[in-house]
Length: 114
Length: 117
Image 1 (cartoon, chains in turn purple, cyan):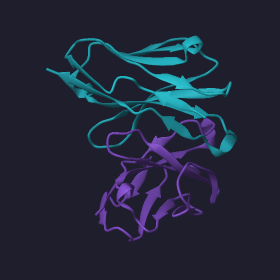
Image 2: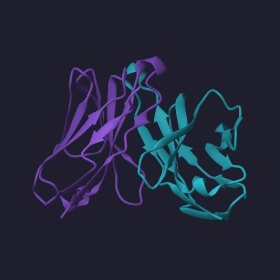
Image 3: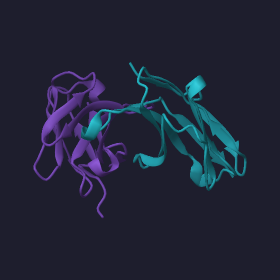
Image 4: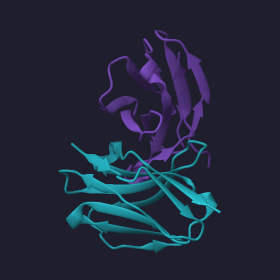
């Protein structure tokens, strides 16, 4: 069984640019959540996708947007990058079989904004 | 609003010592789940344990044990006979129950555990 994968591993962008991060959920998992983890802090919930629709959002501005595809993979898009967007972005997938309680995390994408 | 507090930002122990990581949470929900995750230097969050709000039975799993006390809103995690490989950042997390669609995790700030040989 393949776990959650994310790409790219690392990314360097400059302020004002746009970035797309990708996540492939674990086999059979139809719910994908995205978290932002700033250095030295705990992860913060960005949003969640279920059946290709946004299903819950944290305290993040609209320039953070996402997509979920029919195969349940997902993208996180961030427009107009700011220096504070530098963080580890974690994707997590979950399955109705577990009541969608347990979330399985990918290795993350480390984004640096210069 | 939900909140998770891990007062210990960093703990240093010598190998084979027991160590307890503290976690205090706030929620208005009557049904919720509590988790502990481990984050090694590689960055991936590794699931350790889960407890639901209806089950206050404390358990031991290998070198791990946890103490869930609803009356004090605490969910502490103990590693017995610590090993160098236990060195990592440990996160306590709280999840409300939102049905089949999934549940948002609220994380604490983390406790960095350093186990010295």
